[in-house]
Amino acid sequence: MRGERELRRDAYLRKQRFELASLAERDVNMSGNAFSSCLFVKGSLSGDELAGGPLLGGADGEALRAALAALGYAPEDWVALGAVGLGSTAPLDAALLREAVCVLDPATVIAVDGVAAMALRAAYATELAGLPDFDAAMLEEGVVAHVLGMRVMALGEFAASLGDGRQKQLMWARLKKLPPLGEPY
Image (cartoon, rainbow, N blue to C red; front, side):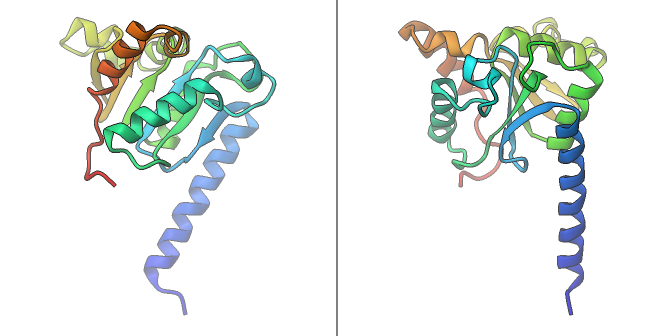
């Protein structure tokens, strides 16, 4: 006989599978671990990503995962969400992006490019407008905003920074503002 804890866990998993399948049916592009505390939102997709490859499957993803590991996150503690539809450059509807973030339920949200930052501004306009710090309300690059219990940061054009040593250092300095919230793994 299965215990109540196992039954509850199975119910949570069924709910999560249903919600993720619902997002996938609406062409929401995701990759990584859906139970992660760190969510990367990407809007400027590479050619491989537009052709159906996984989000953050290239050099930008490798660099972001290495940065998280250096900060103390577990190697699997990341999930990526496209701010544009699957295989598209058309932005997701703000309500759909907000729903996707809600389903993934991260503690930390990082916009890895300007398209993603703009999409998050649209999805959380009301909450951002209520913040007392103007730079946080505008999701200025490198500023940590606290929105609905999440830390949110617009990182800047991360993929473009990989070819410039000074820009990589700037990105690293920004990422260091977002250490894991709990115990390191």
